[in-house]
Structure formats: C-alpha cells, structure tokens
Length: 364
Picture 1 (cartoon, rainbow, N blue to C red):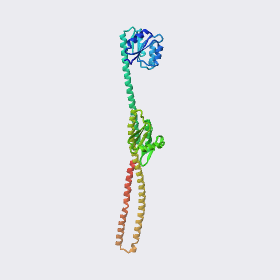
Picture 2: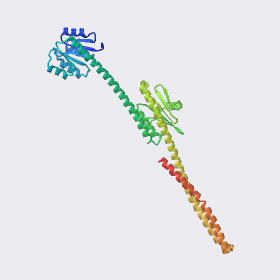
Picture 3: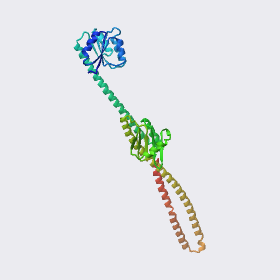
Picture 4: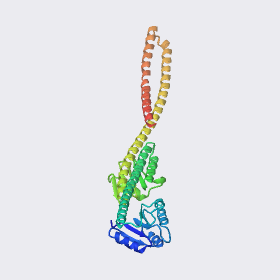
C-alpha cells in the first residue's frame, strides 16, 4: 500500500513524529503543524487520507475539512480529538469525515483504522475507474448509435430523392453529422460531380475520383479514403487516422453508405428511363391519334364519294335492277372490309394507352 499518501495535520510535533514512525512502513507520510502549510501543500497535490486534529491553534479542523470538501477533492478524513463527545462526532460527520479517533488511543487502533480507510479509498478509486470506463464505453456506444442512426435516417431520406442533386444534398448532410469532409461523383451516361453547398469540386479532386474509381471498394492514401461502387464514388478528405477505433468505424460506415447511394442512383436512373419512355409513348399516342383521325376523315370521304359515284352511274350502265342490287351489295361489302382494317389502328392505340398507364403508375 505504499502508493497511499497520508497527511497528518496536528500542531503537536512529537505526536506527528510518532504517527509518522508508526505508519511510514506502509504509507507515504507528510506532516503539517499548521493550517497555512497544509493549505499551501493542498494546492500542489491531493492526499488519499488525512489524519486531522480538530482543535488546531489557528483554525478548526472542522473548517479545514469543510474547505476540502468544497474543493471537490476525493480525500478520506479521519478526525483525531481529545473531546470524545456526541456533539464533536456529529460535527465531524456533518463535514463528511469517514472516521473519528478519540485521544488517547492505542497505536494498534490507529493502524487498524488507517488501514481500513486506506482499503476503503482503494476500493472506491477502483470503482470510480470502473465507472469511468463504463461511462466512456457508454458514451462511445451512444456515439456509435447516433452515427448509425444518422445513416438510417439518410437511407430513409434517400427514398424521397428524385434526382442526383437532392441525393447529393442528403449525402453531404450525413457527412456533416459524421464530421467528414467529402466530394461525390455519380456516373450514368455522363459523369456528375458534387460538393457541399452546391459548390464546384476542384479539378484535381475530379481527376482523383476519375483515376481511382476502379480501385476497389475502399482505397486509402494519407488521411484520405475513396469509396467506390459501380455508379458512385466519393472522396473522404479528413479520415480520423489518429484514432484507430474511430477510423475503423468510419470505414465500416462509409462502406455501407456507398451501397445505399448506389442503390438509389440505380433507382433514379430507372425512374428517368421510365419518364423518358412515358414521354415517348405519350408523343407516339398523339401522332397515332392524329393519324387515325386523318385516316378516318379521308377514308370516310373516299367511301362517300365512291358510293355516290357508283349509284349515280347505274342509269348510264343500263343494268337490270337485280344487277344493280348485286353490284351495290358487293361494293358495300368490300368497303366494310376496308373500313374494318382501320380497327387495327384503334387496337394499337388501345395497347399503347395501356402501356402508357402502366408506365405512368410506375413513375408517379
């Protein structure tokens, strides 16, 4: 127990020397015969245990203990007093002393009480250290939980992004929460670059992203890491390389983030394709509808003209009534067949309208 520092505060020099001789084999001992020297030493170091006389000539030991507790120092105080009264013990208890020894006392009693309090202090320190470790672990867990919560929130927000810029904005918001500085590249038929606050990325950053987008999922260089997928890459410019635990956690997080970005980019690409198909079908339907209307008008005019000319020519051809009826029915029958050919346009129009509805429901 030589690591335990014990102070003896008493104006009786002989008494202090005696206590020092009794305890010095097991503890580090410092002696103080007045309050001023004790106070000066307390500014430089903090003992584990103090044996303090209550009746000091310049100030009460009770007052010194009250000052000590006011400083918030974790020190065990054992009061030593020749006044063994209930009132004296209650005063000691009120200022948070851990024990009370009445004078005169046996040296063995002193040794036993000091040993008990020293062990108590050691156990308390061990508990405080364990508590501090547990608290740090709890804070670390809370930090990790907060980071993963931010990632989950980012994934939920991704589903609301209908274009690359809104997706990039959500990504940079997440990076800010993670205290990471990044720039982003999205690749479809073209290459799109993004930086925070809609700024432009530097030419060298664009060049690095282009050169390293095929270097595996994670590629480290210095305090920077590039994270790649098929259509997405982003460059982290301030990786916490000095903190091994945090560095490993950030690498795990960004590997997950790039997968989410990749999935959403593909969804946006598919959405854009469907939008394009929808517009094309809508335009085609407009052309077909116009063509059908034009065809119907011309075909109807042609039928009317043919029928009128045939009927008006019967008297010139000098046909019998039976021949006229036969010829007229033959013409009408074939004209109906020709008219039914226009139904194919309407069926095509109906099929395209069905496709349009399906695509429209997909893009809405």
